[in-house]
Length: 376
Image 1 (spheres, one colour):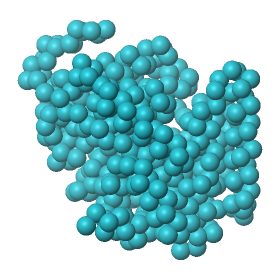
Image 2 (cartoon, helix red, strand yellow; image 1 turned 120 degrees about the vertical axis):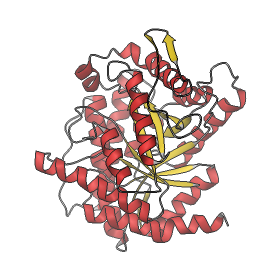
Image 3 (tube, rainbow, N blue to C red; image 1 turned 180 degrees about the vertical axis):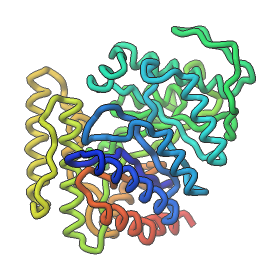
């Protein structure tokens, strides 16, 4: 089982100064992650989602991290693939350049960038996001393997060469952000790894693993995007681990509350998130999460939209918050489910840098070694 971290670059009350600080803080966390034995970092790509994600140019962030590390894998989790955001050839060129500079450490995840805010910034149409994301995956998985490449689909490309060529053969591993069962099935059919939300808890992760495995078992070769098949299942694990377990729970639930309300704001027209008082208890954050979940379920019901775990999971507070023993117990559930990678979400908007750094150390000194020992 692998261990990774994902970065959104979230922050409360953004100013240019705070924004610069949080991005440098994320770099510091990524460098420590390598020292502490993590296998990979992921960086999102979002645009104009104030507070929720200030990670707009993840290829630059990842290059900066790659230059300061030597072993840890460098993952795009994910690149927005619809053509309005960026041409597939540019994705292929940038990723190949980073693969060369990092010594073959790059992973590429695909996403739709489907918030109204992001689409409005780039003139992307909602109906184009699914087909263009899949076409982009096919374009650059082919382009990386061929000395001279051309493509004639919804866009025409080439003939020409993608330079430089990536280090990894046949190309960097491919992934897809999967927030619904339908996208899990699609990832499996395309032969690419799944990056799944784990907020709804272990039972939901178990259900998603089952959907992914069943789709792998029944797929044919006709939809695979590449000969480099990647059946890797990575599940999100929100976590804060400190010697003071009570403080860890308070900081973790407060961070998750900020995360959940940020999602509700940008994806569901909810109010802007706030930072909340430092002395609010974990119980108050848990109660707020439960209340918000009920409000979301009611709103979905009014719109005749079934309330799925992916819709409401961000409001579940039962995660790896507390002591290292608490984290080990939660990860053990994920291990038994068959998760290939535990993707730690530590950098949430209200969590102070010192708590993020201490959490990374606790995982590196206690949690990861526990599971490495089980592997012999």
